[in-house]
Image 1: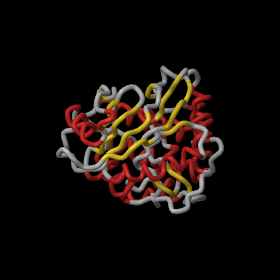
Image 2: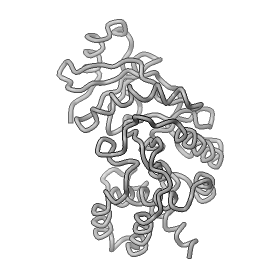
Image 3: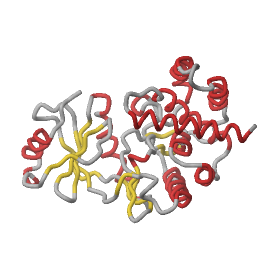
Length: 289
């Protein structure tokens, strides 16, 4: 992993954007895994891929986010400028407009059901945007928007490893149902990582959707996995209520896959979220009888 720190960012800004060299640079409170993000003054952020596998995301966001924003009522990430490899840093990087808001938690929203409605509304609007020449789901975005079967072997291995602590026969049944679910639409925009860390809240409501690094075109079911990773019974129903059953089954499959492979994570937050997700999936399944 490349060491990305304030000194590196300062050197890159000094060299490539000297007009901003006097602005204060500070790491954001919570950076993602794929990128390291720093405040640049009070109105911009600097975003640097953390490794080679994430480097292409910069170009994709620079190309597509301005186009997508024109068609959305919701605020999304907004690139301002492109940086180039230099100062020992080997990848392109970006400067983006700073968006006010706090990372989503259940404590900072006014109403979970209303939040579910607002997020579902954003996704429907997002999916209606024309996808001509858009990047088809594939290796570049870890198959978000592609077929769940890509992760079948990984899921089966995780189930085998967890058979002493989880009802793996039941979970296998749910996984198989997801694999066999009918596909209604494979040609819409897919964010690929709809999760609390990429949703900003202001005044108790959804204010922005950020981090489009795994953006692609394909089956949007993965964007609904949050039904089980975050929402609860009633809000989950609200979030999913306009989807067909095949989409819901595939979305559940995405949530299950991620939960299984992170169930024994060394990171407490990831492990806790995996347990929560599996509990919610099982709760839904038991209601089906």
